[in-house]
Length: 195
Image 1 (tube, rainbow, N blue to C red):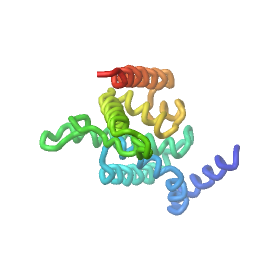
Image 2 (image 1 turned 180 degrees about the vertical axis):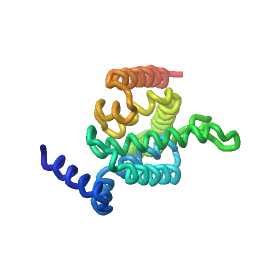
Image 3 (image 1 turned 90 degrees about the vertical axis):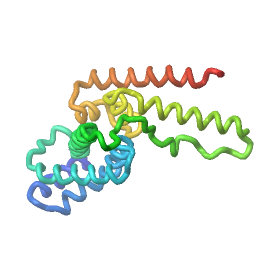
């Protein structure tokens, strides 16, 4: 057992015994990554923070049921994933509220670098249109494909971790990511063709 795994095992044992500081140490190591992921899914930082807090509460309450088959971070991400799914289902039931998947497009903030001094206005505009087009294409992916791709490409999780979070076989994860990449590749080719 590696030093990191031993440390996590010690913290888990202490947290299961009721040590809140040990639980907080476990959470600190992974909460920012989960918050970024929830923010991308919900497209709302405040909602993402609420979902994270709800997930942390659920994790703390059910810590005794954690069997250690995955890392604590993966287990917490699975809880966050299920919390998001419940929230999203509730949003879709409310006709008076805008739900995820409507005509909203995630912000392309951060996708376009600041232009260098020698880029033409046409080049800058083309880069912005390309980034916006890709952001729309990612938002238009079927939910399962988009989540798998986000977890792999933006969060850097392994196929095994994604399979545990989404509770599907690893082959399904590979297939989803492959299909998402194919779709985005086709979209990128269309966006790059001259009008």
